View (cartoon, rainbow, N blue to C red):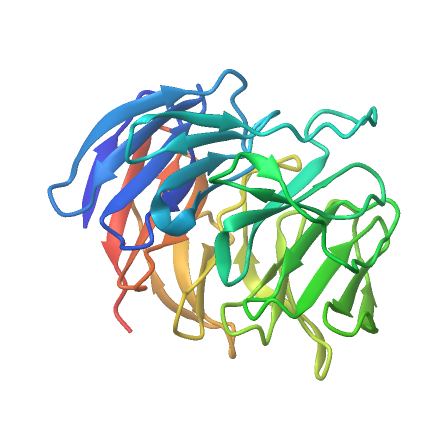
Length: 300
């Protein structure tokens, strides 16, 4: 295990695909890069509009994408800003009302959605331009969140009342479930078998074949009010996930039984804000409110 300190509360993580670098964003918008072998770090850039909306790598780790008011794309090789993605399509929508995802199987492309019920667009990271939009994309209004399965075939669309699954190859709606609360986020498991629904602070799993199941004893935040920050991540290869116990401690859970496998008590602050597994699943990073993050071994 190793613990490091940054300049403000830790809010977002992203591992490079090879696991050699860990990118960390803090509450002041500073983004730093950490060498996971040497355990040393350096500052990269500062976001003009600090956000809590997501950090991920694209194009095989060449670029780092920070989902802020206008997404910033950082060139990790040349160490300079590559682009500020223009998500505005002529609509007047609340700031931040867009969702951004790499296209499964080709992370040089990003799915971009902005606004209420709009069709999806595809942005080419290297060309810094929009390309042809998907030939068919289901629409819901208002669309508040979406995720695409790892095989690129199924999309989960979240509106104010339902989560709906659609087959992107056939255009058919395949399943839906009514939401318990608005503001839900949906994430496919790496094997595509389960959809995690983060409902306020609770965790639910949905498999259309077996139904909706509440994960008792797992929460994503200890904040008294609804928070954008979520401490949740699926393990990339094993049927595990990381979340918080009701007392706020990070823990590794079994995805099938929902039982705690290991609990950790790291001094990262009153709140654990975020969590992320390394691409090989051997380590996990958690970030806290007192300017610290911890990286620990995952014993399978």
